[in-house]
Length: 267
Image (cartoon, rainbow, N blue to C red):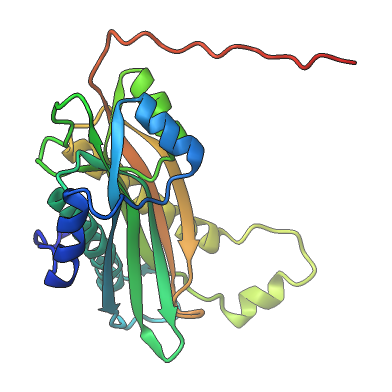
């Protein structure tokens, strides 16, 4: 995958971010009350809500209806639009002087009047450590994670730190069956091997690319992995995405928090 170039904060957002960095107005976030309290307990303070967006035109790649194969042009386009949105969110977080962004949501938005145009929006809460240490990723960018404030607290208490939201994707065209094959399976319970293999291959490509991103970051592992599928062009193709959080163990001597069992008292 070709990674888009680094992005800068647009002027329209710079004023809002500068005001937040100076403490006026009060910070904004999408944290729940529990998440806010637990982040503070972990030694991190919220700085402000940060976001990034990208509207992208996705071209079509011609393919024969009898061929199951990856659509490389669409795969790269869908990867680029997510990275552009993520990059802009990271740039806003850096403008605030954040160590990272928690609770990141990366969601698509389709426009019915533009079937070949898609927008991705990345939103999260920028946070900074109160101990004055630098907890950014090794590449100097704020860490990013879709994990909730509660999950971040649990990771931190056990000596782990998120590095980045890592992503792998694959847009795949699944070949149609011939009329003879379709008729031969009428009324039968039988696996459709060409469909099974095509969809298996597509998921594996997405998973392998996500894992490669984690390895490039030097992470110890990936947690919170979710594999999903999206249809953007009707029956033309399907995209599989794998998303997770690359993590590193920064405090091997951390004492794990042992949960306590609480039983309700009967009347």
